[in-house]
Length: 222
Image (cartoon, rainbow, N blue to C red):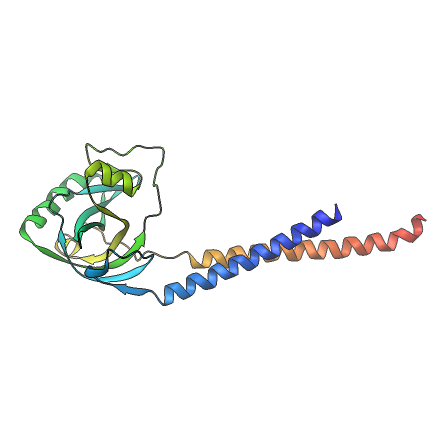
């Protein structure tokens, strides 16, 4: 029993150390995030800043990605060196999603290139994994890039460009709402580390006083 208790203390301590390591790694990555350009979008990467112009992928369409019960994100495919990058141009209220899609299609017909400022981020998986994507109505409830590429015949890349500023928002700011900068969850690791260190510390104190009490009572039992 005593060995198991000590083992739990050690595990808690090492989990705290691991969370500190993750915190330092992500903080450094966030502070030194690289810049990517239209000509380098095809390179594998995790996170990068993007400022540049992109052309609409003419064989694509406008896709709606579930955000929450009241909103949908708007995903627009753009050409990127022989591939397609899905750009999240903003989000709209659920009741305005069809109107917003029509307006964006009109803009795409009248412009050849679009200016984007945003952040590339790898796809993090599903929104609602138990709800199947509505391919007919181009509504997505989960993000599986291979499935999306297969269903819509898009040579799509494995990440999304989250655009915080673009021509669509500039033209229809009252309808297309701008995204916030995607955040790396840095502080989460800091608080997890604090929690595990606290557990290890409490366990160590309990073990110390418990062992001391046993040592004090042992002679009287003999």
